[in-house]
Amino acid sequence: MLGAATSAAEAQWLERMGYPTAAQTEEFSKMPLSELKRLSDAKNNVATVFYGKKLVEAGQGLIGLGVMQQAAVRGSIYANHVMAEALLDKNSGVSDPIEGKARLRLAYLLGDWKASYPLSSSLAGSAAPLEVGIVDRRAMRLYEGLLSAKYREHVPVVFAVRPTSPDPL
Image 1 (cartoon, rainbow, N blue to C red):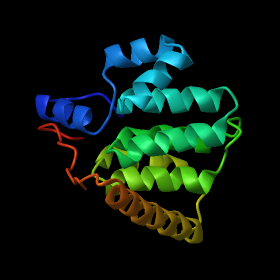
Image 2: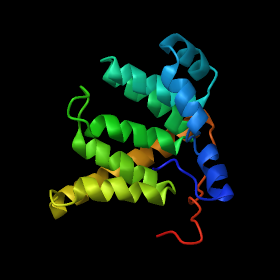
Image 3: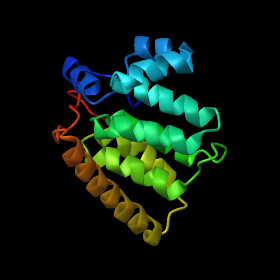
């Protein structure tokens, strides 16, 4: 699981990068949209991602992706994972496999090496070298856009690689 910590250092990193704890996942999954919106408006990144995800599930995909992008600008790498899930889901109403894979690559570029696992499996067997190049080019555009948005919003750019356990494999 992407959000599962194997060490105290990794748990701290996950929290700083906007990943929910198990308790938050349980709490926010059950929370009504109105409450998630209130927490999102208060700049709670985890709530913002859950709010966006619920909007996607309610058929408001583009609005939901926009909401999750706000969390990404504020530093949530987790937001990119959840956007990727929606974009890779053929039934989400916002399906875009290239964009979904690019979101996973962006999470990787931002320091979450575990994003390479779902990215590799989404590319395995079906991706031609051209598709990999297109995904990488789109990920770099997303990275460029993220940096520009952070600059406009006066949000510091933080690069911190996800810690590994003593035996990462």
